[in-house]
Structures are given as C-alpha cells and as structure tokens.
Image (cartoon, rainbow, N blue to C red; front, side, top):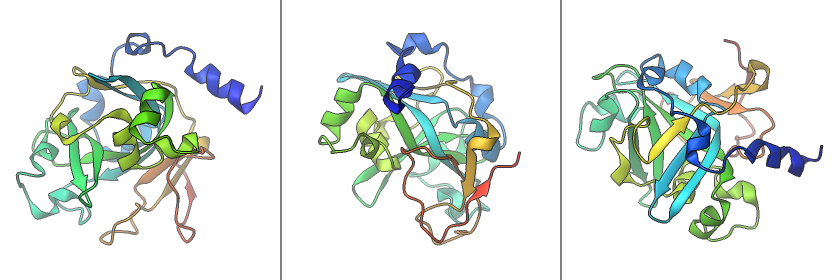
Length: 224
C-alpha cells in the first residue's frame, strides 16, 4: 500500500463527526495530565463552525501541570486570562500568543487544579479544502497543522471557545485510533524557558505532521 493509499484508508470513515462515535467523556480528562496527554495521541479533534466542519488526528501534545509548574499559565495564580484552566475537566482553554496565534488546550484533573494538555499538532483528516483556505494554501499539506497556532487557524478555533465542553459542543475530541507505546516519543517541551527540561511532550514517531523538534532535544521512547 502506498503512503497516499494508507492515508486515505485512515480517513475513509470520517464523512461526518457522527461517524466518529461519541466524544471522549468528561471522566477521560479527570485524570493525571501526563496520562491524558499520552492517551490523546491518535484521538480526533473536531471543530464545527458556520464555515463548515474540519477534523484532525492528534499527533503531538504537551502537558502543563498546575501552579507548581513554572511554564504553566497558572504559575502566577488565578487571573482573568487563565480562569478556564481551573476547571472543570474536559473543557477548552484557548489562549492568544505573540499577538498572532490561538493555542488550544484540554483542561484536566479536578476543578480548582489548573492543569491542561496543549495540542501541538494534528494530521488533517477532514475538511481539508476549508483548512487550506483558512491557512492561505500552504504548499505542503503537513504545514496546515504542524504547530499549535496553525492547527487552531486551520480548524477555526478561537478564544471564544474557551470554556466549551469537549464532550458536548461544536468543539469535540473523539477516541480515534490507539497509538502503540512503541510508536510514541517523549521530549522536553518546546518554546519555553522555565522548566524547559521537563520531558512533557509526546509525539507520534515518524509522523510528518508533528512540529519541528530542536536538534539538541533528547528523544526518548515512551515507557508507561
């Protein structure tokens, strides 16, 4: 089977969000953030807007653990900007960065514990024409969604969606496919200066859709 045929086979069951089955339930997110980050690999992030419906398979995530995590927005305590981080689990936390990009997070743990999983990259699997239009028709398909800002632009995710329930709104995450541990790599988180060495980034090995990993970063096979 060619690479294109394999890709098309993975996409063949995705004619509409209903064909994915029910979204992941609230209890999926009410667990340790690291576990949720790992198990979101292979899940399908979907967003329906007035423009249409688009979806992609999650191939890269990062965990942000709470007020004790210097890289987490909650390190400064509760603010108007980070209030959705404090729960309940299973809602969206979408923030603006560099005055340009939205970044999408799934809130985890318990209400009052400000932790979340940043979705860093997805493999586009539905609504590609809409994604291309939103992203200005990049030359390579991988460049549609190989970064947190890119995927939000491609899917139409904005800060107005903060607080939306990921199991009961136009913004949902569905189970998708299981990614074996042998196909998962961990690295430090990208683009931060505090707690930069913490190995809290998970990605699907050999996926062309993940964001670029700095050359000096250690890459460690995932061990549950």
